[in-house]
Image (cartoon, rainbow, N blue to C red; front, side, top):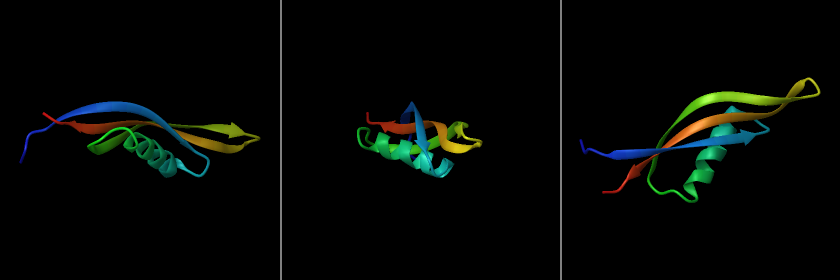
Length: 69
């Protein structure tokens, strides 16, 4: 197994449709400007309430990318 070094970015993704979409939005946005994305972890989940219903979801996500030597 190769040894790698990773760096983490903390992002906040959001979606009106669900938590999974919020994660996918954050990862997709990171992928537009960061190479070698390898993993993510969801640190926090929260949302916004509008008129007694869920208006949108937010997730705080750490995204890890491999640092090239």
